[in-house]
Image 1 (tube, rainbow, N blue to C red):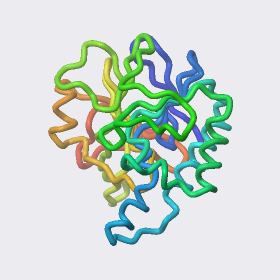
Image 2 (tube, rainbow, N blue to C red; image 1 turned 90 degrees about the vertical axis):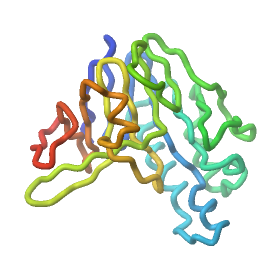
Image 3 (tube, rainbow, N blue to C red; image 1 turned 30 degrees about the vertical axis):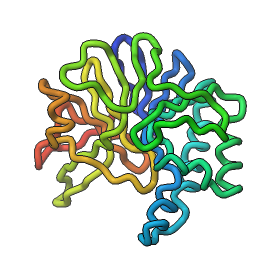
Length: 232
């Protein structure tokens, strides 16, 4: 896989096609909206889904740990689909998570789905994390962003047309001061970047980085229906 470099607020960030950010200067790996145990949450309501979402998400996260060898892992909120999700981890998935966390400074940013820290798991919890020049939080601040931030929550995705087909893919969206990460979890869906909830945060437009199978595709602004893709 080939990560795409992004220079933002004077820092060099690597946008991985798996949907996470690696910040080399801080040896920090950042992922948003893992939504672990979403499958079991749906099953409790009678909506049966294949019960493999947590394993798939953690396997992808473990792969990124091996790829970048970070010193710090920050989960940008909604890491667990509900307050009881951490307690529903099966033994194999719990062991997966413990192996990922071993030797790392692990930070759980609280989200709207998981406002309480996972007391049965390693790591520390906070509402937001100041890492100059960025503030890392779950929900992006309203309006124009003057202090650089990275956030999740909105699960951005974008549509493009290529070779006569319309493709919808999760994406990073960023301007000079704000980046919103795609949802990292397996059963997460997405919100189109043209939706006012996202577009309203970028009144001057933004860069989009769509996730491909093994690379990231970049656009200067929100893609028009016939925008051409270019490799980042």
